[in-house]
Amino acid sequence: MIQRILIVEDDARIADLISKNLEAVGYECHRSPDGGRALADFARLKPALVVLDLGLPGMDGLEVTRRVRKESDVPILMVTARSGESDKLLGLELGADDYITKPFSTAELTARVRALLRRSTGTVTERVLEIGALRIDPGRRSLEREGSGVPLTTLEFDLLYFLASRAGRVFSREALMEHVWGSDRVVDDRSIDSLISRVRRKLETDPSNPRYLQTVWGAGYRFADTA
Image 1 (cartoon, rainbow, N blue to C red):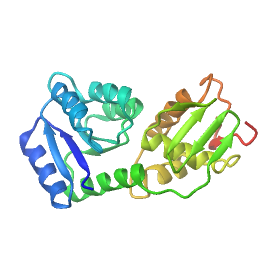
Image 2 (cartoon, rainbow, N blue to C red):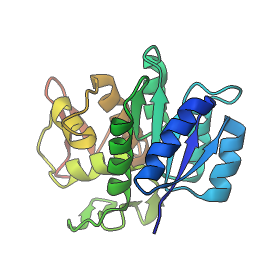
Image 3 (tube, rainbow, N blue to C red):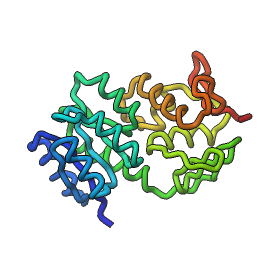
């Protein structure tokens, strides 16, 4: 089945470049030139992934991310400018899964798209985890807390399952970055801290006093093995 990708980019030249390269490797691409159109196209097309420029006219990419995340956990790949460090971090905080910085190579963009789609749809054989009030199912890539489903993005689930399946062990930020984003990705500490905060808000009754996802000062993070 051909996977559908929505490209949200106001620069027609860049949108055309992205579209042609992704279509060349077998994806079905649709383009939206602005945020309002993107939301309408997203609802209509139900894409498997969104490539989203943050610097859109009118409704920017951050607001698009916020609204999409209210409805769906579809992978979002942000396209950012080099000067957009704060926007990149806010985008990750709002639920985007990865980012690529302009100017970018089409080979890198294609690799990022493939990786996100593989992680969001791939077959997983790890065991189901039941810890305290939580049930984490890697086959369905789902989290239940006290019997109710909790929506997670691809990145959020990857981080949660990695730590929960290794409960009690402490992992540095660098180790978590390598697992979640890959060894070829340069990601700063704030990106992993932002991701941890997002998962805590969904996981914990009191995120300021976490029961499950704990900080080990000076060392990193761990998932409590006595939760």
